[in-house]
Amino acid sequence: MDTTGLFRLDGRTALVTGGSRGIGRMIAAGFVAQGARVYVSSRKAAACEETAAALGPNCIALPADVSTVEGCRALAADLAEREARLDILVNNAGAAWGVAFEDFPESGWDKVMDLNVKSPFFLTQSLHGLLKAGGTAGRPAKVINITSIDGMRLNAWETYSYQASKAALIQLTKRMAARLVRDGIHVTSIAPGAFASEMNKAARDHGDTVARSIPAGRIGEAEDMAGAAIYLASRAGDYLVGETITVDGGLVHASLGASIDA
Image 1 (cartoon, rainbow, N blue to C red):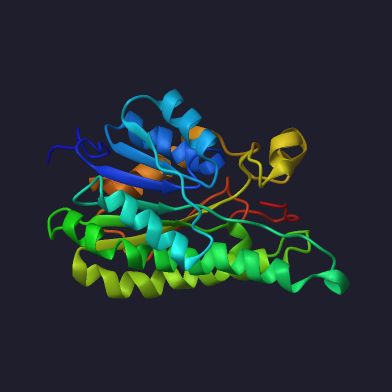
Image 2 (cartoon, rainbow, N blue to C red):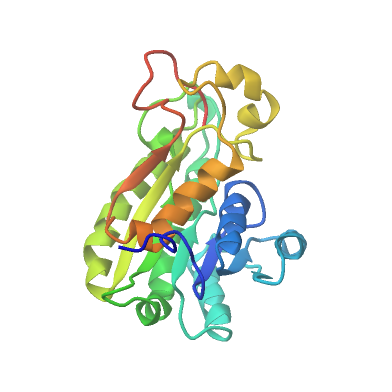
């Protein structure tokens, strides 16, 4: 048994949505460091270009708006013009909405559910052909959905559609995994806890305070997220199908106290 290349991604092609910042950029940087060719996508072209420039020549900007089915199909078509196959898809683009129960608007449901649940499904569907081309019995293609610990337990905030969407995506991961495994495509998810990002301003702006509620005693770092994603994307994670890995410092499974926003 040779484990020296177990976590390497040499020769693999990846697409990371929401890849220009936050958790998506952490994952993209980890993939590039392990030898992958990585496309980063988000709505803002300038942000994609900045990330690609920072991560080097193996990172390519491919801006797109995946909040609609048409946008998902357009991104898939753009990628197909550049690549004959796709080995790794990370469905990371997402949105949150927090408003009091009495005032929570329909738009706060539609935006969040569309981007957090519909888009991962329809982007994966649109890329099905490229993923099948990338997957083999000996080396499956990978789809990694970025869910959240907020799909597993309650937080302290009135983020009704966000929590519902992430719980739905965890279940959707299992359903998609059961179907796509026959095509040599393994679907899994990562449920992050507190990582500093634009979406998680509490962890970004008040990390020391947030850390007090986390059994590990700190918020997540870029290496924590990159490591989990590399594991799932690489040969090391080839036998995981439909699984959700919780990356939260023990908050969900080893906590006796109160919850935090994540």
